[in-house]
Image (cartoon, rainbow, N blue to C red):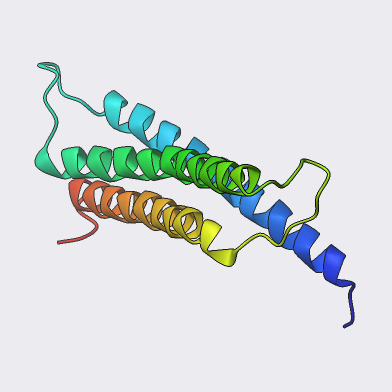
Length: 131
């Protein structure tokens, strides 16, 4: 199957944006779900605290993905501006500007999925399906 490079890039961008939105929503939904499982004295079992911690870390990675990228782009922009470049000039964007965002992206997906694995194990044990 042949495709244009621009279409390939567009597909990649669409899929990562969609995955980010879904991951973010799963983080919020997971916290809300765990909140509904709290006991009458508002305490949570340790495994649900672990789930909340993983979800919170995943959501923090989501924020950091965009924050770090914006800071890196701003610093690079300032460096180019000081070198005399104008807004109308064309430049090559160094790949290193995207590395922190990529690390945060994969971290948030991993952390949210890990939280759901722990939550699923916890629920299966509570229903006496496991262990």
